[in-house]
Amino acid sequence: MQENKSELKIREELFSAHTTQVVEALNKIKGIGNVTYLPLLFEILLNKPEKEVEKEILFILNNLKAKEAVPVLTQALKNPDYLPIRKKLTCACWQNGLNFKNSLPLFIDLIIQEDWETGFEALTVIENMNEFPEQVVVDLEKEKITQALNAVSEQKKYFLQEILKLIG
Image (cartoon, rainbow, N blue to C red; front, side):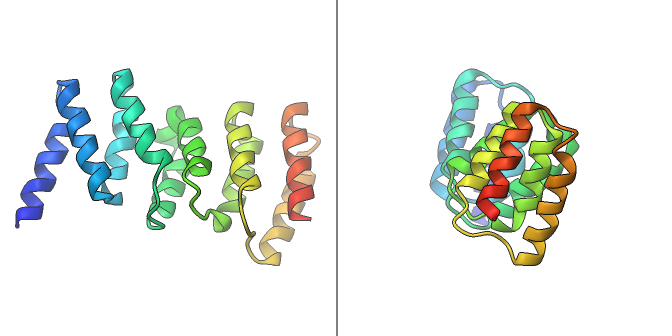
């Protein structure tokens, strides 16, 4: 029961009008490391918070170590509501060093479909992968890349060619 009161208080503080309270709540989240708060952090980012709050949220996202955060981040990247913060979320994926190997198709799609800056962040995620998914997935992605090469900008073409080298 105590956890629920504490959780409620953190949630309340996250949406406070006072920056200091929000930052205090974010510091509590850092200590807890609970991935259930991630969607709330995404929502706050969407609402263009004070610079100090944004900096704290990005610090949390960039330093995630819980593997349970991977599906939460990948779902957020797929969510059209989060388009305004997609670049920041993609950047967090390579910053935090979590294993996104099973999300290779998602990051390739981001390169193909999003602006070149988000594409660059997605390329960095792929470059930092220590391993790739099974060969059948890699083969499908090679095919997707080959088809996309004629339809993308020169910058994205370079990104996609680099991926082809990486996944061989």
